[in-house]
Length: 101
Image 1 (tube, rainbow, N blue to C red):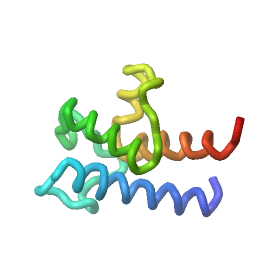
Image 2: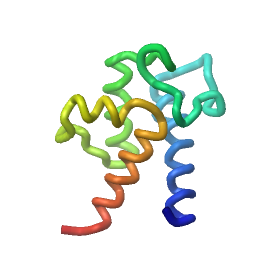
Image 3: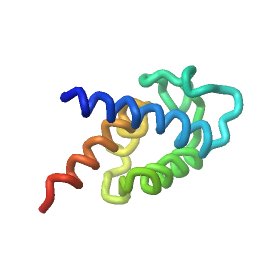
Image 4: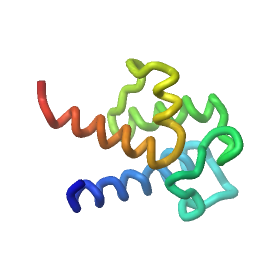
């Protein structure tokens, strides 16, 4: 991973924490600094539900153009596990987009 990719990854993770999770889901009791990259987002972790998962997916499409309709549900669940896995999905999607046909 190049320095540029690492910086991009950090920017993406901060955007996920602030814009996708805190702002979009209106989370009032937590700050971006309190959300670690490996914090489980659903169930016992942050405690998000399926409606909030849908909001995160819509936000990924709006902010980054990531379309998740073609991803199988079991695979998508893995991608939405935590901030790190969401950032990796976004980075992979961006890299596919720049590679061309």
